[in-house]
Image (cartoon, rainbow, N blue to C red; front, side, top):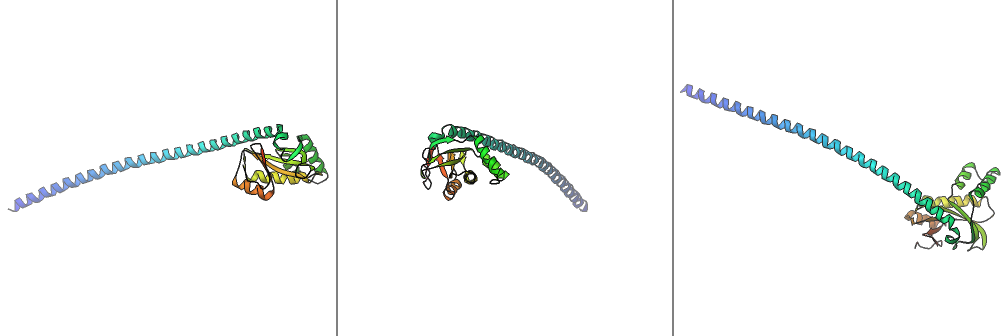
Length: 214
């Protein structure tokens, strides 16, 4: 009787050992699968990092391309408005002529010599996109128009036009009016145009001060 009970106990222990072995095997298989998943997740994370870096490089190239295109469009606009200044600025002046860069340089150089302009002012003034002169229609006197040109006019363009107009007015015996020329204007530019008293020329159409964009 006792032997039968011992036999049953040994059988139970054997079955328990077999179950333990199966459990350990399952755990080992599970650990292996977890390791595989970890490796795959690391691979996926590395791939995501690569794609993110590639996206950043693509965006950087795109931004550079947008900048280059903007510069080209600005240069084309500048050439267009210089060549057709007499037509595009008729609402502001009459008897219009573009001021050659050499003439502007001579004015700035003489002003620096007599200390009416600093060296930095001299350089800043010569960076202006376009200067034209003629008779200001609203005043009936000879004057200048200082023009900044960009495909999209922002507040920096408006500020530059205003600042460079003030510089030129310091060295000529005539009034100087600032203007910005472009295909579009940002909201900030519209605000600064009003506060700084800058003319807008949109798609070849001069917009009087205080008037909404068309």
